[in-house]
Length: 105
Image (cartoon, rainbow, N blue to C red; front, side, top):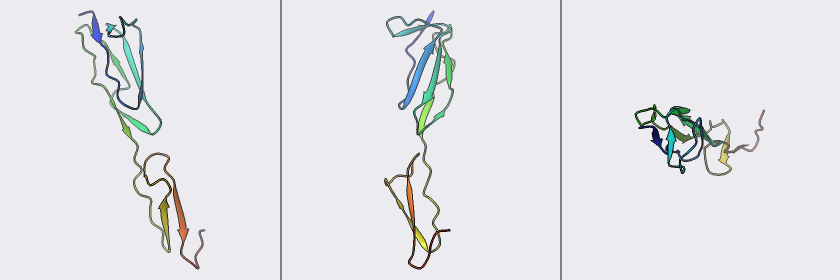
């Protein structure tokens, strides 16, 4: 083979193909490089680049963009927290408040 099929694009990602003109967007020449990056709030798991080999396959399996989860915030003595948007993912916000008679320092 002298080409590879269209590379898989993971959800929540941007994919850029270089070193190869696409043939109708369905095949890419040997040596074509595919670069991946994840959207904000996602983490790239796997290779950031893949290359089309003369076998007709890419040299790596496609990556995955995994949502960044921060977990629940630490509790505080004599206080509590509220998840502003009810999530614990990237850019989520938390509001801490103190019991009566206590203040944050």
